[in-house]
Image: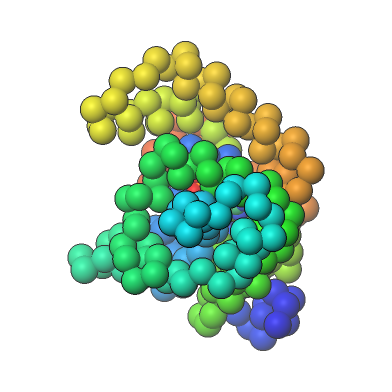
Length: 230
Ligand code: DC
C-alpha cells in the first residue's frame, strides 16, 4: 500500500519535519494526543537499528546485514503505565532511555546515511499509518515517506535557541557542556543533515514553516493546530 492510497482512503497524515532541537518530538506527541491519532517517531527507528546492531554485533558499515536487521528487527511502541509517554521496545525489552545515549545517537546518525537502510525502513514507517490518522515526526516524512500527506509542517528554531534547549536538558541530567560548543555542534549537524545525498533535511514542497524561536510549547502547539484545522 502506498501513502497515496492511504490518504485517498480518508486517513489524515500530518508530517512534521525539522532539525533536532526544533521541538518536533514534544509537539508531535501533544498533537497526536489532541487529535487521537497514532504517532510515528521515525528517529527512534534509526536509534533502534543502531542499538540492535550493537547487540547483534553488526558493524555500522555492514550495509547488507544492517538492511536485513532494519527490515526484521523486533520492535514495538506502547504507552507507559501513566499513559503520558511512549515507550520503545526492542526484542521485548524497554529501551526508551538506552536509545537516547550519546553512543546510540552517534550510531543512529551513521546508519541513517545508508540508502539501503532507509529503504528497508520505508515500509515499516508507512505501516504506522492507520485510521483515524497519523502524526509522523522526522526529517523526510513529508519529502519521502509520506509525500501525499494532507498536512506538512517544517519546524525550525535558531541554532542558538536549539543549543540552549540542549544545554538545559544536559544541565537537568547534571552534565555541564559549554553553550558555545553546543552551538558549534548544532551548526555542524545542520550542515551534515542538509547536505547529505540521501533524504537531506529540506522542507517538503508545500510544507508550512514554523519558526519556534522564542515561542513556548503551548504557542507552537496552537500555531500547529491552526494549520491542521486550516
Ligand atoms: O530525531 P532523532 O534525533 O531521534 O533522530 C535520530 C537520527 O536519525 C538522527 O541522526 C537523524 C536521523 N533521522 C533520519 O535520518 N531520518 C528520519 N526520518 C528521522 C531521523
